[in-house]
Amino acid sequence: MNYPIVRLSASPEWKEKMAEWFAEKWGIPVEAYRESMEEAIKKQGPVPEWYVATDGGKIVGGLGVIENDFHDRKDLRPNVCAVFTEPEYRGRGVAGALLARICVDLAAEGVKTLYLLTNHDSFYERYGWEYFTTAMGDGEETPSRVYRKTTELSCNP
Image (cartoon, rainbow, N blue to C red; front, top):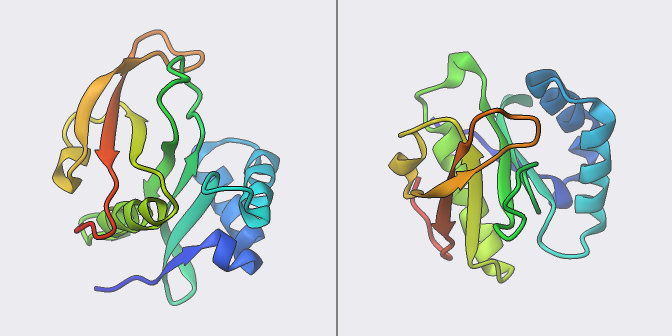
């Protein structure tokens, strides 16, 4: 199935709905998302940016691109963050489509490499991401995996 992807900077009317959805999924105050999303709308560069996949106007998946995803490797930037797909939509290509879209969009804006901090150990390889190193997430007791992806003007999910 095809799930339309909304890029916040191109559709700022989605800001509140997106901020509330991400806050609910990740347990982070909605104000933190609003602030980052407001920066994306003002667009001083390619980052930050926020995306959601939709089904009939309902958000079914999303992710963001920020400078650093709250880890100790500040040199690895920008970072894909807050990747989430609603459980009933998993396995339908939602995350792959979102990851492909950011790859293309950020390549067009001159970003050559993206990074992603995760505890998953095989999911992102399916979409062309490669394990790169580890990093300590803020407040974490064990290191997490860092993946990287070279962006291209065409990325297949």
